[in-house]
Length: 204
Image (cartoon, rainbow, N blue to C red; front, side, top):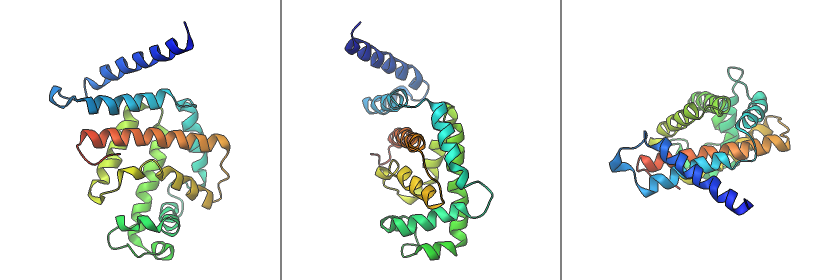
């Protein structure tokens, strides 16, 4: 069997698997070609990654040691870094559109938001091998952000921002850790867009 045939057969099997898995996710009325496209994209993203899910988990969790849960204000520090490094996104935070990084550091609001985002990232990294739990938690993250009108184009580059934050905390990311976060972000974005599509909300 040629490589071309093997590759095509792989995608046929993947497509059939996608059809089977989404049979319990949509009513017949909502099973559209757009839904099929987003589901297929999600499963192909998982299957075509360079790393195994176990390796993605191991490398991402290891790199999070510089920002542990329940120890200091690491979550708030993310927003301090984010506002200082990417002020173009401050408009998503009503009432804080003109905040500087120093303003964030003194804000109880961003203490709470920071705790939440840090927990989200730690949970996602630790459950990324468990597809059903991972997907459910990504959907929960999306739901929490519905009222903020986040540009759906930002869900993938967010993980580049996150790596920048880890570096600001002193992390020296290895090539494997960078690749792990890249693949993590690709899969995360694929599920985000699939869920936004199903909910008939703006998506990329």
